[in-house]
Length: 290
Image (tube, rainbow, N blue to C red; front, side):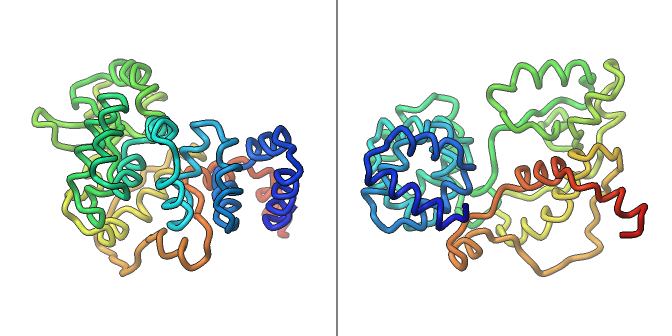
C-alpha cells in the first residue's frame, strides 16, 4: 500500500476499535514511515492513539524523525513518564534536541529522572548553540590511546556496546585526549590482535571545533563520512583519504527538506544498509552490457 492508503487503513481500524490490528500495523512500520504517517494526520487525538501503540525504543526513533508541528504536539502532551522513557532510549544528541524545545523547568525534572550518565551528556550538549557543531555532536563513542593494541580496542568495544549502539569507528587519542586518528571497525577486526592502533589508524581525520557553524561542518563531513560508511558497509578495504583541496558551498540541512516535503529523510546508515541488501544483480548486468 502507498503511504496515503496505509494512513486510511489505520484510521479505519482505529475508528472501528481494532486496537490489536492497529498495534501490529504500527509495529511493522519503519520509524521513518511511521513518522511520515503521523505527520500526515491532522487529528491530534488520533495521532496520539497511534503513537501510543509504539514500544518505547521505536517511539523514541519516531519522535526524533517527526516534523516540527507533530513533534511539538507530542512534547506538549506526552506524560512525563512516557517522555522519560523515550529520552532514555535515545542517544545523547537526539535527547538534547528534544529537550531543547521544552520549558526549562520541565527539562530539569526530566534530566533528574533519566540515567545519570545520559543526563550528564545531555547537560553538556545543551550548553552549545543548536546551530554549531557542538549542538549536533554525539557523546556516545569509543576512544582509545594510540599505544593500545587491537585486542585492547576490541575488548573496549565489547564492554561499551550497550552504551554505544552504533559503533563505526574507533577514535584514537593522544595523552591529552586530542584526536589523532580514526580506525574503522572493519579494519580493527581484521588486524593482528597485538598491533598498536597507531600503526594502522587513519591519520589526519576530518575534525570540527564545537563552535563551528553547522553549514561548515556539513561541507567538511558530508562526502568524506559518507564514503567511509559505504567503504565499511561494502568491505572494499579502500583507503579513504580526507582532502581540503576542494570545497563546495553546499549543506545537508535536513530541516529544510523536512519542511519543504513534509517528510523525514532516512538516516545514512539505514539507506546504506538498504543498498547493501539490494538483491539486484548489477554486476551481472554490467558483464552482459545491460
